[in-house]
Image 1: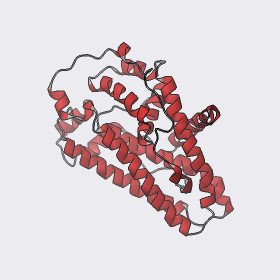
Image 2: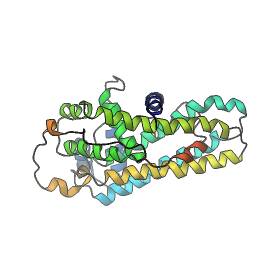
Image 3: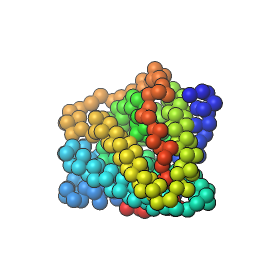
Image 4: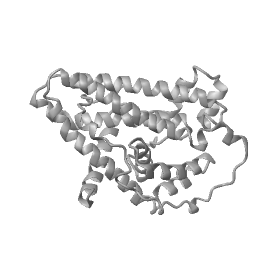
Length: 294
């Protein structure tokens, strides 16, 4: 990718992310989500500890968390695929005007499942509760999660280093420093640019698919299923390998991690190091202006 491609990609990524986050229902309440999902398997004391700390630290088995995670992925996949198929129904050339909203909706569903998986595997709230908007810390954290979903290996490496802090209970303010310090910015920016380039190609191509009657509707849902679920599963499998998702990690004491020693400058981002997303060019995603809050 050229520098111009990456610059445009980064700008488009930011626009897409902000548009997705403005949709009702994209933000997931961590405490409410964990309480609802864990109530099927755990008593109140365990659930309260999982909310106060994290599920693994509360002693909830990896098997239970994996089972809940798979159910969440299946639920979100069915929902986004079904709505995608409806959005692909005949609409003529006028449907091209809905493409930006469709792309935001797809991204919105991606962010929903991202949060659910993060909470199950030990991460704290991603979005601020005070409504201050999308600050650098939140943007960087989201970008790393999304990078993992899109198969950017550098995102795995960077997020693993942040996870090392979160796993030992580093204070939120110190964790913020790790997520916003200068060495991580170039990495996050290029990861965002790569995702933005891929999503931009998909956005323009989707408009063509929307003018194709009926067949386009069925294909839309199938393609969404084929892309959304693997992305979510990729993130689930990665998060399950991190220490904060492991019961055994919390059975022994750990040294305090030096935030100042966390360095990202050695991580290289290769734009070929990303899952091939050409199939995205055929997606006719979700239409509408909100996402259910289930």
